[in-house]
Length: 407
Image (cartoon, rainbow, N blue to C red; front, side, top):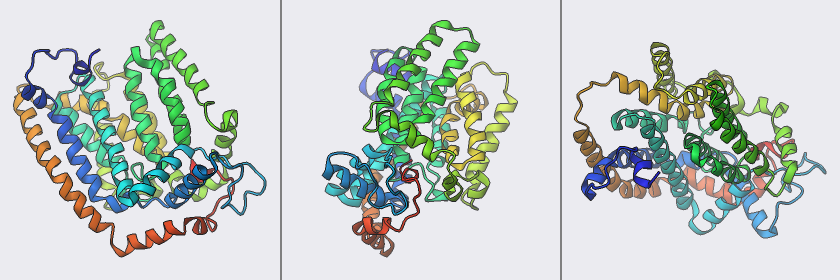
Protein backbone atom coordinates (compact mmCIF):
# COMPACT_ATOMS: atom_id res chain seq x y z
CA UNK A 1 0.00 0.00 0.00
CA UNK A 2 1.50 3.33 -1.00
CA UNK A 3 1.50 6.51 1.04
CA UNK A 4 -1.51 8.07 -0.66
CA UNK A 5 -3.60 4.99 -0.12
CA UNK A 6 -2.51 4.75 3.50
CA UNK A 7 -3.72 8.28 4.13
CA UNK A 8 -6.83 8.44 2.03
CA UNK A 9 -7.91 4.91 1.18
CA UNK A 10 -7.40 2.62 -1.80
CA UNK A 11 -9.73 4.56 -4.07
CA UNK A 12 -7.57 7.68 -4.33
CA UNK A 13 -6.66 8.69 -7.83
CA UNK A 14 -2.96 9.15 -8.51
CA UNK A 15 -3.25 12.06 -10.92
CA UNK A 16 -4.52 14.66 -8.50
CA UNK A 17 -3.07 18.13 -8.30
CA UNK A 18 -1.39 19.53 -5.20
CA UNK A 19 -4.38 21.74 -4.22
CA UNK A 20 -6.66 18.74 -4.56
CA UNK A 21 -4.41 16.61 -2.38
CA UNK A 22 -4.25 19.41 0.19
CA UNK A 23 -8.05 19.52 0.30
CA UNK A 24 -8.11 15.75 0.84
CA UNK A 25 -5.79 16.29 3.82
CA UNK A 26 -8.08 18.96 5.25
CA UNK A 27 -9.36 16.72 8.05
CA UNK A 28 -5.77 16.11 9.22
CA UNK A 29 -4.90 19.81 9.14
CA UNK A 30 -8.07 20.70 11.00
CA UNK A 31 -7.74 18.03 13.67
CA UNK A 32 -4.05 18.54 14.38
CA UNK A 33 -4.29 22.34 14.42
CA UNK A 34 -7.25 22.63 16.76
CA UNK A 35 -6.33 19.81 19.12
CA UNK A 36 -2.83 21.30 19.46
CA UNK A 37 -4.43 24.67 20.24
CA UNK A 38 -6.45 22.96 22.95
CA UNK A 39 -3.37 21.25 24.36
CA UNK A 40 -1.41 24.51 24.31
CA UNK A 41 -4.19 26.25 26.21
CA UNK A 42 -3.68 23.64 28.94
CA UNK A 43 0.13 23.93 28.97
CA UNK A 44 0.41 24.38 32.77
CA UNK A 45 -1.48 21.10 33.19
CA UNK A 46 0.93 19.35 30.82
CA UNK A 47 3.62 20.04 33.42
CA UNK A 48 1.35 19.21 36.34
CA UNK A 49 2.08 15.50 36.77
CA UNK A 50 3.25 14.97 40.35
CA UNK A 51 6.05 12.56 39.38
CA UNK A 52 7.65 14.82 36.77
CA UNK A 53 10.41 15.97 39.12
CA UNK A 54 11.23 12.37 40.01
CA UNK A 55 11.35 11.27 36.37
CA UNK A 56 13.67 14.14 35.46
CA UNK A 57 15.96 13.33 38.39
CA UNK A 58 15.96 9.64 37.45
CA UNK A 59 16.83 10.53 33.85
CA UNK A 60 19.70 12.74 35.04
CA UNK A 61 21.03 9.94 37.24
CA UNK A 62 20.84 7.31 34.50
CA UNK A 63 22.65 9.60 32.05
CA UNK A 64 25.41 10.30 34.57
CA UNK A 65 25.95 6.65 35.53
CA UNK A 66 25.32 5.24 32.04
CA UNK A 67 23.02 2.57 33.48
CA UNK A 68 19.99 2.08 35.71
CA UNK A 69 21.21 2.03 39.34
CA UNK A 70 20.46 -1.16 41.22
CA UNK A 71 18.80 0.77 44.06
CA UNK A 72 16.58 3.84 44.13
CA UNK A 73 18.66 6.48 45.94
CA UNK A 74 15.55 8.52 46.87
CA UNK A 75 13.46 5.78 48.44
CA UNK A 76 13.86 5.44 52.20
CA UNK A 77 11.68 2.30 52.37
CA UNK A 78 13.15 0.20 49.55
CA UNK A 79 16.02 -1.21 51.60
CA UNK A 80 18.24 -3.62 49.69
CA UNK A 81 15.64 -4.52 47.08
CA UNK A 82 16.23 -3.87 43.39
CA UNK A 83 14.88 -0.73 41.75
CA UNK A 84 12.68 -1.58 38.76
CA UNK A 85 12.49 1.62 36.76
CA UNK A 86 10.13 0.56 33.98
CA UNK A 87 10.13 4.02 32.38
CA UNK A 88 13.90 4.53 32.22
CA UNK A 89 13.94 5.45 28.51
CA UNK A 90 11.25 8.11 28.91
CA UNK A 91 13.13 9.49 31.90
CA UNK A 92 16.29 9.83 29.82
CA UNK A 93 14.47 11.48 26.90
CA UNK A 94 12.70 13.93 29.23
CA UNK A 95 15.98 14.71 30.98
CA UNK A 96 17.68 15.56 27.66
CA UNK A 97 14.74 17.68 26.48
CA UNK A 98 14.59 19.56 29.77
CA UNK A 99 18.34 20.17 29.86
CA UNK A 100 18.41 21.93 26.50
CA UNK A 101 14.93 23.43 26.18
CA UNK A 102 13.53 23.67 29.73
CA UNK A 103 9.75 23.78 30.23
CA UNK A 104 8.99 25.14 26.76
CA UNK A 105 10.65 22.14 25.18
CA UNK A 106 8.81 19.68 27.41
CA UNK A 107 5.49 21.29 26.51
CA UNK A 108 6.27 21.18 22.77
CA UNK A 109 7.47 17.59 23.05
CA UNK A 110 4.22 16.49 24.70
CA UNK A 111 2.11 18.40 22.15
CA UNK A 112 4.07 16.82 19.29
CA UNK A 113 3.22 13.39 20.73
CA UNK A 114 -0.42 14.48 20.92
CA UNK A 115 -0.33 15.60 17.28
CA UNK A 116 0.98 12.19 16.18
CA UNK A 117 -1.79 10.48 18.15
CA UNK A 118 -4.42 12.68 16.50
CA UNK A 119 -3.08 12.13 12.98
CA UNK A 120 -2.67 8.40 13.40
CA UNK A 121 -6.11 7.94 14.93
CA UNK A 122 -7.65 9.95 12.08
CA UNK A 123 -5.92 7.75 9.51
CA UNK A 124 -7.26 4.60 11.23
CA UNK A 125 -10.83 5.97 11.15
CA UNK A 126 -10.57 6.99 7.49
CA UNK A 127 -9.14 3.62 6.49
CA UNK A 128 -12.05 1.92 8.25
CA UNK A 129 -14.42 3.56 5.75
CA UNK A 130 -15.65 6.56 7.72
CA UNK A 131 -16.18 9.84 5.88
CA UNK A 132 -13.96 12.83 6.59
CA UNK A 133 -16.74 14.60 8.49
CA UNK A 134 -17.63 11.60 10.65
CA UNK A 135 -13.97 10.81 11.34
CA UNK A 136 -13.33 14.44 12.21
CA UNK A 137 -16.18 14.55 14.72
CA UNK A 138 -15.21 11.26 16.32
CA UNK A 139 -11.45 11.83 16.51
CA UNK A 140 -11.82 15.42 17.67
CA UNK A 141 -14.11 14.31 20.50
CA UNK A 142 -11.84 11.44 21.53
CA UNK A 143 -8.70 13.58 21.46
CA UNK A 144 -10.27 16.27 23.62
CA UNK A 145 -11.35 13.71 26.19
CA UNK A 146 -8.58 11.12 26.50
CA UNK A 147 -6.04 13.54 28.08
CA UNK A 148 -8.45 13.85 31.07
CA UNK A 149 -7.34 17.39 31.95
CA UNK A 150 -10.39 17.73 34.20
CA UNK A 151 -9.01 15.08 36.55
CA UNK A 152 -5.41 16.30 36.77
CA UNK A 153 -2.88 14.94 37.66
CA UNK A 154 -4.35 11.65 36.36
CA UNK A 155 -3.70 12.62 32.74
CA UNK A 156 -2.68 10.67 29.65
CA UNK A 157 -1.26 13.65 27.80
CA UNK A 158 1.30 15.29 30.05
CA UNK A 159 5.03 15.35 30.67
CA UNK A 160 4.92 11.80 32.03
CA UNK A 161 5.45 8.24 30.71
CA UNK A 162 1.67 7.92 30.35
CA UNK A 163 1.97 9.88 27.11
CA UNK A 164 4.43 7.32 25.75
CA UNK A 165 1.98 4.52 26.50
CA UNK A 166 -0.88 6.33 24.75
CA UNK A 167 1.29 7.04 21.70
CA UNK A 168 2.56 3.45 21.46
CA UNK A 169 -0.95 2.11 22.03
CA UNK A 170 -2.47 4.08 19.14
CA UNK A 171 0.36 3.10 16.77
CA UNK A 172 0.13 -0.54 17.90
CA UNK A 173 -3.65 -0.49 17.40
CA UNK A 174 -3.34 0.98 13.92
CA UNK A 175 -0.66 -1.49 12.83
CA UNK A 176 -2.83 -4.41 13.95
CA UNK A 177 -5.39 -3.36 11.32
CA UNK A 178 -2.63 -3.47 8.69
CA UNK A 179 -2.28 -7.24 8.73
CA UNK A 180 0.63 -7.25 6.30
CA UNK A 181 2.62 -5.03 8.68
CA UNK A 182 1.99 -6.94 11.91
CA UNK A 183 5.60 -8.08 11.94
CA UNK A 184 6.47 -4.50 12.95
CA UNK A 185 4.62 -4.98 16.23
CA UNK A 186 7.58 -6.57 18.08
CA UNK A 187 9.75 -3.57 17.13
CA UNK A 188 7.11 -1.24 18.58
CA UNK A 189 6.94 -3.42 21.68
CA UNK A 190 10.70 -3.09 22.25
CA UNK A 191 10.31 0.69 22.51
CA UNK A 192 7.11 0.48 24.53
CA UNK A 193 8.57 -1.93 27.11
CA UNK A 194 11.40 0.53 27.77
CA UNK A 195 9.19 3.62 27.91
CA UNK A 196 6.44 2.57 30.34
CA UNK A 197 5.03 -0.42 32.15
CA UNK A 198 1.74 0.07 30.33
CA UNK A 199 3.04 -2.09 27.47
CA UNK A 200 0.86 -4.91 28.84
CA UNK A 201 -2.06 -3.19 27.10
CA UNK A 202 -0.43 -4.14 23.80
CA UNK A 203 -0.97 -7.81 24.60
CA UNK A 204 -4.67 -7.14 25.26
CA UNK A 205 -4.91 -5.44 21.86
CA UNK A 206 -3.19 -8.18 19.89
CA UNK A 207 -5.08 -10.81 21.89
CA UNK A 208 -8.40 -9.29 20.78
CA UNK A 209 -7.28 -9.30 17.15
CA UNK A 210 -6.06 -12.89 17.44
CA UNK A 211 -9.29 -14.01 19.15
CA UNK A 212 -11.44 -12.27 16.52
CA UNK A 213 -9.56 -14.06 13.75
CA UNK A 214 -10.17 -17.34 15.55
CA UNK A 215 -13.92 -16.62 15.83
CA UNK A 216 -14.04 -15.94 12.09
CA UNK A 217 -11.94 -19.06 11.45
CA UNK A 218 -9.53 -16.85 9.58
CA UNK A 219 -6.55 -19.13 10.05
CA UNK A 220 -4.16 -17.01 7.96
CA UNK A 221 -4.66 -13.91 10.11
CA UNK A 222 -4.77 -16.03 13.26
CA UNK A 223 -1.26 -17.26 12.47
CA UNK A 224 -0.08 -13.73 11.66
CA UNK A 225 -1.35 -12.31 14.94
CA UNK A 226 -0.14 -15.37 16.84
CA UNK A 227 3.41 -15.03 15.52
CA UNK A 228 3.33 -11.27 16.11
CA UNK A 229 2.18 -11.84 19.70
CA UNK A 230 4.97 -14.38 20.27
CA UNK A 231 7.44 -11.88 18.84
CA UNK A 232 6.15 -9.19 21.22
CA UNK A 233 6.59 -11.58 24.14
CA UNK A 234 10.25 -11.97 23.23
CA UNK A 235 10.60 -8.24 22.53
CA UNK A 236 9.79 -7.20 26.10
CA UNK A 237 12.95 -9.00 27.24
CA UNK A 238 15.07 -6.49 25.29
CA UNK A 239 15.54 -4.04 28.14
CA UNK A 240 18.14 -3.37 30.85
CA UNK A 241 16.18 -5.47 33.35
CA UNK A 242 15.91 -8.51 31.09
CA UNK A 243 13.47 -11.12 32.37
CA UNK A 244 13.38 -9.27 35.72
CA UNK A 245 10.92 -6.88 34.07
CA UNK A 246 8.33 -9.43 35.18
CA UNK A 247 9.34 -8.84 38.80
CA UNK A 248 8.86 -5.11 38.31
CA UNK A 249 5.37 -5.63 36.94
CA UNK A 250 4.25 -8.07 39.61
CA UNK A 251 5.65 -5.80 42.34
CA UNK A 252 3.28 -3.06 41.14
CA UNK A 253 0.14 -4.84 39.94
CA UNK A 254 -2.01 -5.94 42.83
CA UNK A 255 0.12 -4.15 45.43
CA UNK A 256 -1.66 -2.43 48.31
CA UNK A 257 -0.12 0.89 47.27
CA UNK A 258 -2.65 1.03 44.41
CA UNK A 259 -5.32 1.84 46.99
CA UNK A 260 -3.59 5.19 47.58
CA UNK A 261 -3.08 6.18 43.93
CA UNK A 262 -6.11 7.93 42.45
CA UNK A 263 -5.58 6.79 38.85
CA UNK A 264 -6.06 3.20 40.04
CA UNK A 265 -9.37 4.16 41.69
CA UNK A 266 -12.74 3.83 40.00
CA UNK A 267 -14.17 6.27 37.48
CA UNK A 268 -16.78 7.42 40.01
CA UNK A 269 -14.12 8.33 42.58
CA UNK A 270 -12.29 10.44 39.98
CA UNK A 271 -15.33 12.24 38.55
CA UNK A 272 -15.36 16.01 38.85
CA UNK A 273 -18.19 18.36 37.96
CA UNK A 274 -18.65 20.01 35.59
CA UNK A 275 -15.36 18.75 34.09
CA UNK A 276 -16.48 15.13 33.70
CA UNK A 277 -19.81 15.93 32.01
CA UNK A 278 -18.43 15.86 28.40
CA UNK A 279 -16.87 12.43 29.01
CA UNK A 280 -20.08 11.07 30.52
CA UNK A 281 -22.08 12.40 27.54
CA UNK A 282 -19.61 10.75 25.13
CA UNK A 283 -20.00 7.42 26.94
CA UNK A 284 -23.81 7.61 26.89
CA UNK A 285 -23.85 8.49 23.17
CA UNK A 286 -21.48 5.62 22.38
CA UNK A 287 -23.56 3.11 24.35
CA UNK A 288 -26.83 4.34 22.79
CA UNK A 289 -25.46 4.11 19.23
CA UNK A 290 -23.93 0.70 19.89
CA UNK A 291 -27.23 -0.68 21.20
CA UNK A 292 -29.16 0.95 18.34
CA UNK A 293 -26.92 -0.52 15.62
CA UNK A 294 -25.69 -3.60 17.43
CA UNK A 295 -26.19 -5.75 14.34
CA UNK A 296 -24.06 -3.59 12.05
CA UNK A 297 -21.35 -5.58 10.30
CA UNK A 298 -19.58 -2.49 8.96
CA UNK A 299 -17.84 -1.83 12.27
CA UNK A 300 -14.70 -3.94 12.88
CA UNK A 301 -15.32 -6.49 15.59
CA UNK A 302 -11.92 -5.78 17.13
CA UNK A 303 -12.69 -2.09 17.59
CA UNK A 304 -16.01 -2.89 19.23
CA UNK A 305 -14.56 -5.47 21.61
CA UNK A 306 -11.69 -3.19 22.66
CA UNK A 307 -14.09 -0.28 23.19
CA UNK A 308 -16.41 -2.24 25.46
CA UNK A 309 -13.54 -3.95 27.27
CA UNK A 310 -11.84 -0.68 28.16
CA UNK A 311 -15.14 1.00 28.99
CA UNK A 312 -15.74 -1.61 31.71
CA UNK A 313 -12.08 -1.48 32.78
CA UNK A 314 -12.26 2.31 32.90
CA UNK A 315 -15.30 2.24 35.18
CA UNK A 316 -13.39 -0.12 37.47
CA UNK A 317 -10.05 1.76 37.30
CA UNK A 318 -9.98 5.28 35.95
CA UNK A 319 -6.60 4.93 34.23
CA UNK A 320 -8.18 2.77 31.49
CA UNK A 321 -10.93 5.22 30.54
CA UNK A 322 -8.56 7.22 28.30
CA UNK A 323 -8.00 4.11 26.20
CA UNK A 324 -11.74 3.66 25.82
CA UNK A 325 -12.00 7.09 24.17
CA UNK A 326 -9.24 6.16 21.72
CA UNK A 327 -10.54 2.69 20.84
CA UNK A 328 -14.13 3.89 20.47
CA UNK A 329 -13.21 6.48 17.82
CA UNK A 330 -13.69 3.98 14.97
CA UNK A 331 -17.12 2.63 16.04
CA UNK A 332 -18.36 6.13 16.81
CA UNK A 333 -17.17 7.48 13.43
CA UNK A 334 -18.98 4.70 11.57
CA UNK A 335 -22.12 5.21 13.66
CA UNK A 336 -22.06 8.95 12.89
CA UNK A 337 -21.65 8.15 9.19
CA UNK A 338 -24.96 6.28 9.24
CA UNK A 339 -26.68 9.32 10.76
CA UNK A 340 -25.33 11.88 8.29
CA UNK A 341 -27.41 12.89 5.25
CA UNK A 342 -26.55 10.88 2.14
CA UNK A 343 -26.18 13.90 -0.13
CA UNK A 344 -23.29 15.80 1.32
CA UNK A 345 -20.84 17.85 -0.69
CA UNK A 346 -17.68 16.07 0.42
CA UNK A 347 -15.45 18.45 -1.54
CA UNK A 348 -17.00 21.48 0.15
CA UNK A 349 -16.56 19.87 3.55
CA UNK A 350 -12.91 19.13 2.79
CA UNK A 351 -12.32 22.71 1.66
CA UNK A 352 -13.98 24.07 4.79
CA UNK A 353 -11.89 21.80 7.01
CA UNK A 354 -8.73 22.85 5.17
CA UNK A 355 -9.52 26.55 5.54
CA UNK A 356 -10.33 26.19 9.24
CA UNK A 357 -7.21 24.10 9.76
CA UNK A 358 -5.00 26.73 8.14
CA UNK A 359 -6.45 29.39 10.41
CA UNK A 360 -5.79 27.15 13.41
CA UNK A 361 -2.21 26.47 12.24
CA UNK A 362 -1.49 30.21 12.01
CA UNK A 363 -2.92 30.66 15.50
CA UNK A 364 -0.52 28.10 17.00
CA UNK A 365 2.52 30.45 17.28
CA UNK A 366 0.35 33.09 18.95
CA UNK A 367 -0.99 30.50 21.37
CA UNK A 368 2.54 29.36 22.15
CA UNK A 369 3.63 32.91 22.96
CA UNK A 370 0.71 33.16 25.38
CA UNK A 371 1.77 29.81 26.82
CA UNK A 372 5.28 31.10 27.52
CA UNK A 373 3.73 33.92 29.51
CA UNK A 374 1.53 31.44 31.39
CA UNK A 375 4.56 29.34 32.31
CA UNK A 376 5.97 32.36 34.12
CA UNK A 377 3.10 32.59 36.61
CA UNK A 378 3.89 32.24 40.32
CA UNK A 379 2.65 28.66 40.51
CA UNK A 380 5.02 27.66 37.72
CA UNK A 381 7.91 29.43 39.44
CA UNK A 382 7.15 27.24 42.44
CA UNK A 383 7.34 24.24 40.11
CA UNK A 384 10.75 25.44 38.91
CA UNK A 385 11.93 25.40 42.53
CA UNK A 386 10.53 21.89 42.87
CA UNK A 387 12.42 20.70 39.80
CA UNK A 388 15.61 22.44 40.96
CA UNK A 389 15.49 20.53 44.24
CA UNK A 390 13.68 17.50 42.82
CA UNK A 391 15.90 14.82 44.44
CA UNK A 392 15.33 16.37 47.89
CA UNK A 393 11.57 16.61 47.45
CA UNK A 394 11.35 13.09 46.11
CA UNK A 395 13.03 11.66 49.21
CA UNK A 396 9.83 12.55 51.07
CA UNK A 397 7.66 10.75 48.53
CA UNK A 398 5.61 7.71 49.38
CA UNK A 399 7.25 4.71 47.75
CA UNK A 400 7.28 1.17 49.06
CA UNK A 401 8.26 -0.99 46.12
CA UNK A 402 10.33 1.45 44.11
CA UNK A 403 8.27 0.67 41.02
CA UNK A 404 4.84 2.28 41.24
CA UNK A 405 6.01 5.79 40.39
CA UNK A 406 7.61 4.52 37.20
CA UNK A 407 4.64 2.43 36.16
